[in-house]
Length: 385
Image 1 (cartoon, one colour):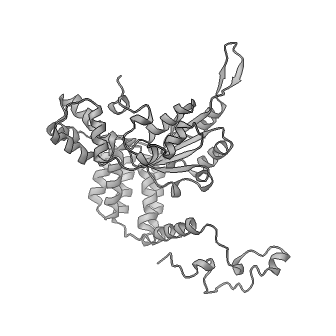
Image 2: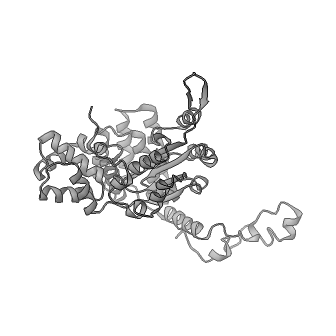
Image 3: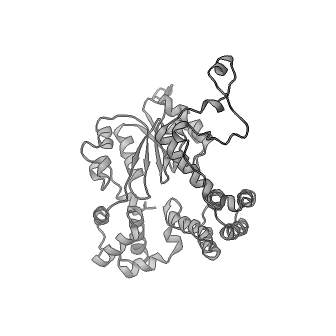
């Protein structure tokens, strides 16, 4: 079976990469790392179709490393163990340890939970694995601090129209100006999205024109790619419909995901997050309902769990919304990142030794004290309003 168009024209060197000049241009960080074969762990943060996988493969090839590619959606600790314990045999069949450096490309690293990230950490710390994480989410919020501190973060920008034009031309397909303009508007900086639609129109209708692109657009199975593209558009529409208290729209986008075979646990997981992020204190039972839906999906599976999902979606969409707890957390996190670990006021420190008491730890603490317990530098801050 022929690989997808995006895979067939994937750049093999940095000179072939279109866009991301701030990372791969002359004397820019990733080009210098490739040219000097500098081995270090890093995270690529950017929207789908901006070149994360391509850059990871080029980097691993430059190191002459053994590249392991995993998706955090389906991978777990056992997959990491297999990579670490992987051995090779020499011609005499004598067991030897693989001498090539091991590079792990972990796509959607934000889907690894804290326990999985904790498990990965010592291998990255020791250098047994060089990690390249790819994420569409802000790594500051999704990657644990110890792991993040051992990685550089590179931000990939959506591709410009000029870059997308260059990539479309590389396909050698016949595309007229109107179709070009249609693809640029549809792709919105995502090369893989444009290439997938071109390939669909070509394979279904034999030519890439506005008419055939529109026809291809109507095919839900062609458009829905669980690794990105329509996946992200649909889940975004789903969440925003619930946020706007529009149950009809939310259930429609739910139906699109169900019919396309989306993982029910992925949908349910986003609902659990939504219950705290958007409904929050306005209706605390929303979190109970969302967790029950997640558990039902785990227990029952398709096709019946689609009913549980619809039940939960209707409830969440109609619930009152209050983002105050979420907004307070993000504001506090921003201050933590800016100011690091500010000193805890002495009166609320834990005075467990005589010396600590002599240093006034816990002094003047009263159970219902109304003065600020925040660090002095932030004492006038109001996160929760």
